[in-house]
Length: 79
Picture 1 (tube, helix red, strand yellow):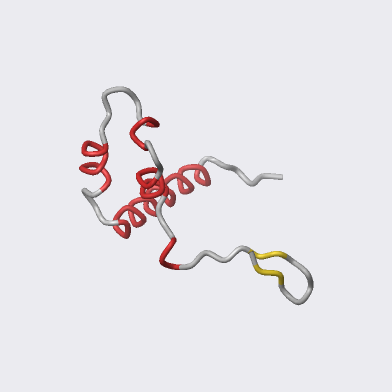
Picture 2 (picture 1 turned 90 degrees about the vertical axis):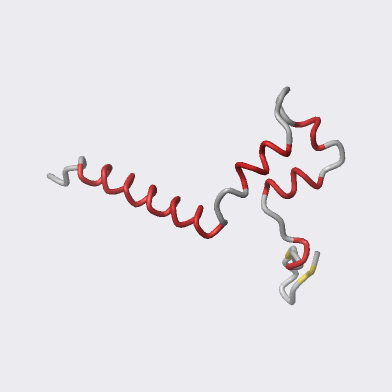
């Protein structure tokens, strides 16, 4: 933790230590103990690595845009 000139504490996350939530889960001791019965990391790896992170983010943005479009189409702004 770093303290700046104003006395505010700030956390620093070195680039080498950054992980996705899935990578963090896999890095835990006894990580397989946190999975549902019958689920393995091999199965999860096949799902997780089917598409790239960028492609997944692109799909998320498209789905989010579509969702907000349908919300705003149904909203009337009459006063």
